[in-house]
Image (cartoon, rainbow, N blue to C red; front, top):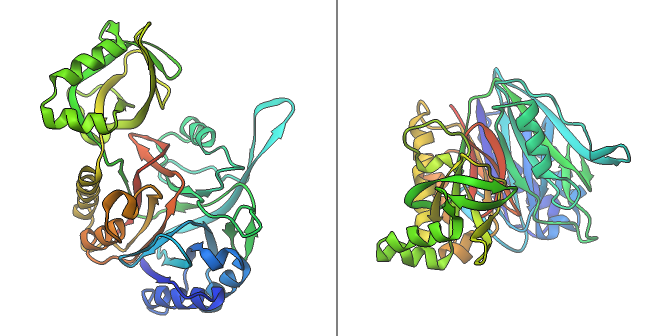
Length: 386
């Protein structure tokens, strides 16, 4: 597999796209790319057709997907605002790819709408998906995929930029699509999903003993709020300080282990609590029998977690990874870490300079356990093997 990546802040949409695509082409060693993925912000969203023309003039990819972004990243750099374009291209060697544009249409006799254009992935395939947050019900689609294609990982993110006319900005081959989702179904491609939720578990594990929807009534047979307050009181002072800054919960998606590790938990926020009933609402559906543990997040923890997760993937790859696609929350960047280029430079460092590009998403898609979820404040990375 050959992968190349490029990034440009040039203000001219066509010229910037050509510059980024030319950098990506250099990594392909004169092999025509099977795929190009582009992320565009600023002036590119005033003339997205010119951006596509520039990419095709330089690369002529067999398939292309991409989306508008509030900020782009690549080659160790992050352009969080203003004009930027990141181009990622790959020649798959023995692998194959099907690109798609999926939409969900409402039907009177269909309660959840009708999904059209989504391929049927095989058990060893991987999906990369970029969705418009206003016209595509990503959560519902991921739930359907978990039911119909169990174990198939989905990585990607929600578009965080729109055209100057206020319409959706999804790129599919040489066209700009206003709604739905675009993506790739990768077959026979060595890809390791990496999900860094940026939070660490605190305190002891608790079993949910009564719950409905996203509301937990009881933990370990006692009112949920009372139990959580007790666990917080047992924490060391430093950990209680983390909780004060923002309490999160982690719910184990797949049980059965004697001990659970950091990556086994789906991390979600606490939405509220009822002091009269002791019930606690969280940002995920829960069921009795699931294991829960308190979590906390800050910049240092988020950085450590990303490095740890990337290092595990790098160690699992023979030699340097071929490349990576990066989907980082638009709440990360300088506002979280206080410095530029945090996630992009860490990906470049840990993956030994492997060509990487991506964008700051309005929600990140990645697997926890054997099913994929929509996350926030997360960095999800598709790491491609050599």
